[in-house]
Image (cartoon, rainbow, N blue to C red):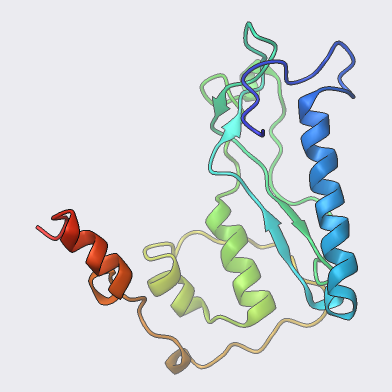
Length: 178
């Protein structure tokens, strides 16, 4: 229901299917907070999408897939606030007519994994997000003290598809291993 190519909002922008989706998300996060109880203060949840939405509506009163997007972080361990650059919505501030992609989401993920769980930067840059050494986020996303990084020896390279039995069987069955 999030792919709102048509009828994204009614005449009143505070109604319509986007408002309904956001209301459902809010309820789900509230339910999660309730269920987690005493664990909530140690929790970080990330709501992201693989694509953004266009700034301008289309002919069906919806929005199409866009370049720039946002992410929502919730949980008792989240610092709070708004991070990132906001160049604005004026046509001159857009990227090819769309929202400017000002923050690489890998920076958000890397920051949370490092600050909240203690995953070392070298592991994040070489194993989790290979080649992402230049992708950083200066903002502190997690409240409280930063976790002490775990020893690099605690991590290993992720398995290849050939190493994982169900995936290997699938790849063999459909001749995907070359």
